[in-house]
Amino acid sequence: MKVRRQKMGVRRQEPADARSERIAHPNMTEEYRRTLVQMMESQAYRELAAAQMFGYGLRFVPDLKWIQFMTWHIREEVEHYQAVAVMYRSFTKESVEPKVTARLADKPVPFAESWFELAMAQFLYDRGGFWQLQEYENCSFEPYRKVIRKIIGEERGHQDLGEKIVVGLCRTGRHEDVKQPLFEKWFRLGMLSFGRPGTPGNRYAMEVGLKKRDSGEAMQDFVNDIKPAVRACGVRFPEPGRVGLECPKDLDWSL
Image (cartoon, rainbow, N blue to C red; front, side, top):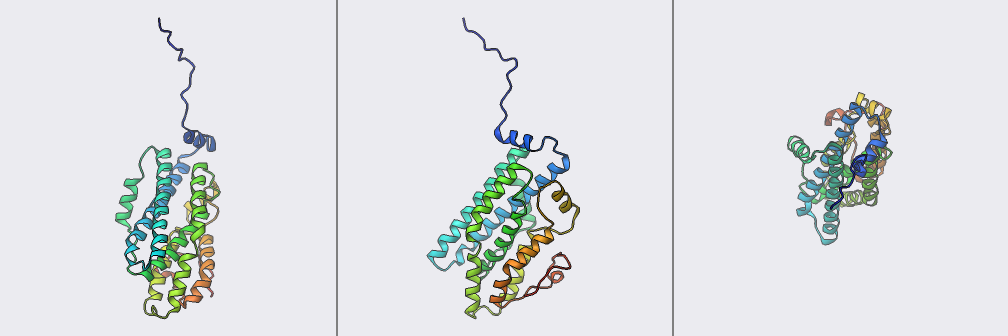
């Protein structure tokens, strides 16, 4: 005769990620949850957009050394997208892919059409995203903080490569007619990574510890970081309004 195991009083074990979410924020509000979902969707969009843009640009890469770097970079962006997608499914019980696909259809990131432009994109779009990520490295939501710190750690090692390529190409004198418009194009896209400064959403995210600072402060760090390369390339920062950027009025553009 088989003895049936007593089941009363036995609790079903929660997945580890669900427990960490509950422990990190036992009183999570709807606004906190909604802000987190928006952050995850935006990050997934940026990671996949970068992978697609660099993937398209492979046709312009001139030699094996840089083909190896770009293919590694594409693979890294896809892995980062996957990390965000896994976190999103754990948190929402839904897939982020339909959201990202719809956003890419509505707001596609342009593709580079030359090796020089691809280098400019790697320098400015990728660098802007790196500075944007650092605003979330101490995020009050532990699963998001872990994913962002992983991405930052992996991105940190190649942040200066795009800059070196662009500066070197500019010094050849062969790109004088296109360097300013391409700089403005990709600088704008890099700045858009931070979102609009001074918004209620910014203030709320700071109040609850989801991000460190207002977007305007992160914009200034990004601008300061690229100033030496801007000078070396012989280009200039555009007027924000002319290229459709919302920036703090006191942002320091001096070179």
